Image (cartoon, rainbow, N blue to C red; front, side):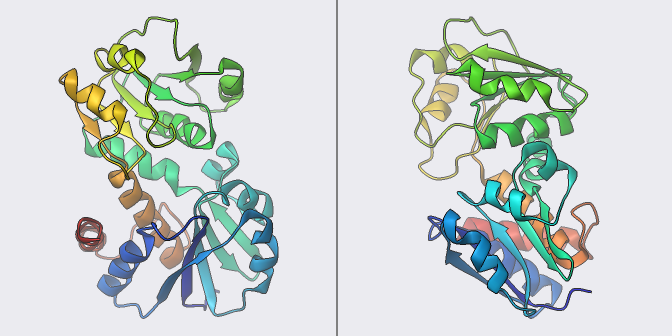
Length: 275
């Protein structure tokens, strides 16, 4: 049984996090007197800090650089955490921390929100941990083919082995003319400038969802704008992954809806815009 009422977001850096505002809005709407804070935690300190938590703690939101060490520390993983090797949510139980990756569901819901539903092909830019979540999210969104474009093709080869039931193709970021796709997910570091490659991609790549939400518009977003396309920042993903975290903390399951969930989501959306 879950009894704790303390929650927090951990990471390094952490001051920029919008999670406290999003979660506070959700728990107010739900009438829950829960505490949600933030703490700067380095990767090396994570395992010991987890062991120090007492029964007043209910769960944690986790950001970089803690997602991989959290996956290794968890007593159990949900399917998305297992597939990606990354955890952004800990539910603290008497049997040990249960790890979830709500980034996947959050990104899939963000795609649905902009009208990307059952696409033929989604293009993912990048090959790091965020790109792995993006590939899984593309499959969750109904894509038949996921094309991954990376500077180092060898770094993306492992994505072909993901058990998703869809075809994953790996292509170089440059030197290979891009074909048309239904949508693009950019899982690149903030501020990445692809130069002329961005212009080539923007003309044939459908709407863009860039997981970055600071420093907007990004160079990629500007390229999409010049091409007359749609460019969306990562705020919708942030919002929806936080909603799924709230489901975990309240119901123990990201697939189980909250009571009055529409009102909770609306309150969180207002908090996000106002933060």
